[in-house]
Length: 324
Image (cartoon, rainbow, N blue to C red; front, side):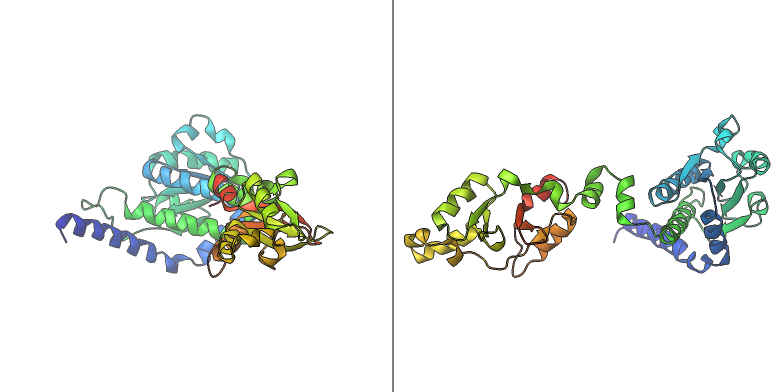
């Protein structure tokens, strides 16, 4: 191992230790912060300067996306008018490793006059910020990972981790669900996984390949080719599913000779195939398809409560929608 790798590993070790040191500090002070935020009728306003401000901004974003209304207030902008966004119903979480950051201390008198509650996340519990807070969260570290002991490294990592712990505790108290999370994350693959249902992306109506059980394999092959989904659902006279015929079934049928093409599909189809209903999440369909034994499947019939075939879902649909 060269010196570069050794130094990098030391940084990771020190930052990991800084986070582990926080575990005993999830105590009555942490509980008090959670209770204060839960009883807050306004918003949680994060503030901090420099690197602490960047961490505060991230924690605010995490809070907002997990059920706790929050925004970031730049302390320097605060003393030039942005304090007008703060109300007596709000809770302020002020971050400062030293607890003596000038820009943060400068807004304290106004925050107190407004009447907002104050939680201090500090590395120095004897600091001015801590002494003026309603609740103090100690996120101090033994040392920075910076070899000069100057650049905020372990301290910002610890503060970020403690902020995440706070956000997740609040998320649990709010009984925040995946559907609520999806409302706040409608973009990207995460939102699509959480929001999309099978009914949103299945092939239904005229796009849904279906044949009667009395149809021949040849007739079914024409429908499979026409719809381009690699399979056809087999139904009885009441449109209730009795099986599924895939192009794989047909390829395997070739070993029986050309004559099998004239046989009814019921002799070649897969009976009691896996299926799903349209209100289920697309992510659940993906799980069924990927976990199928002895090997994954690429198509999934969609049935209603009476087992009528109303659609067909293909793996490529999930890929196209970003669910995979």
